[in-house]
Image (cartoon, rainbow, N blue to C red; front, top):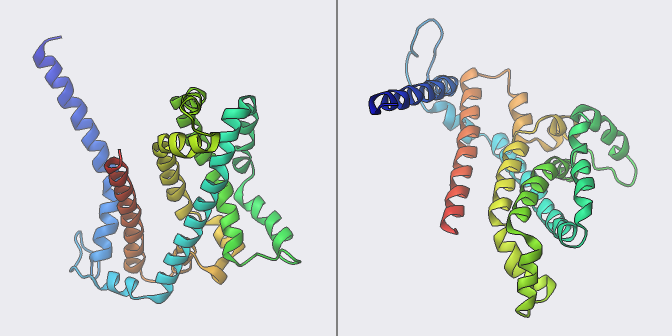
Length: 265
């Protein structure tokens, strides 16, 4: 292949990639423009631009409360996942590696049952009695933990297999470290990238979870997605501002986490 043909092929692939990128970006750009417009109905372009919809959104105490409550249940579920899954993975891969096949089956069970079916069962179990948690953030944290479990388990398991856990532990113990000291000071730092990836994936998924939140807590503990659903009959400009704010928050969070990950590398 000549240099000219190679250059034309590279240009063709670049054009295709950018066209696909623009096609994916068009709905977001339209939503952004609509959230900034004063009115937009019978014309190609909006009649004017304004920030009043964003000011109305970020001055709404109900929105701020729902936003904070979404962060609380997401971070609570992720913290619970890290505390429970990391020791479990270490024990399984170091002491009982043959259980990995069984664990791969068990972690897929949350996806085997649809959220609507799970919610009905949870409403029956935790709707009354000594463990009445329906309408509280605790039941959401538990549900979100089961959702995050497959993402956390798979990402960290792949990382553990990549670092060759047994050889790393044996080397640390030969240098005088105890099992738990080697796990915390040697193995855990090597799991940082896998842990960060699993946290990013889980947070992005949990922050947009609607079914469990709507059925199990609803307006009694209103999360951001429930708030968006309840505000669907309000102004379309207001809802567009809400969608764009949600998107940019997730984008900013991902960028900051990736930057922190690179700085610590």
